[in-house]
Length: 214
Image (cartoon, rainbow, N blue to C red; front, side, top):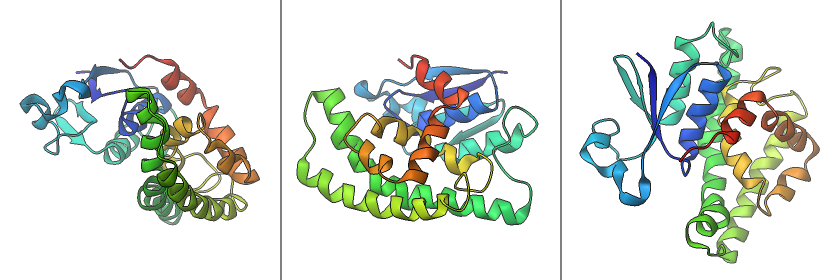
């Protein structure tokens, strides 16, 4: 039975799952959920994600939601396929886990409003972002990236010397922000800039962001 991903091109979480599947070279069926019509709140989607959000995921008899949990499942269930995205050494795995948590609790919080103001408002409504909000959120991002710059001066990737879920979880948000004025915030930090160039040039990233998700 084919893996099914229920998602949308307006969803950072959907892209996290697609990137993980691409890194693992796993075939899947993408089922588009139409957010504008409120499909994600309909009974058939609430049965897959009771919070009425996307993505949702099915692999045979296992049904999951929350993109980071889905990616961790894929990485463990298909550990022998494609790119190894999790470390089996407990100490190295713990370091990766720290930076996965940093993405969820530091980076994501610093960038979600920027994504809305600089990308989604323009794309969905043809509106410019609120400058006051953008300036306030940019300050938060600066603080986070200062920490990342220090970390990446010590290792090539956030979790260590090899690409992992700690890096992958950041990729969709970074991809979108690179098309905004926030690009300079990343570019002015040499280690962060090199890391961004590396993760965005990965074959999985090129494949996912080159494929239509409509």
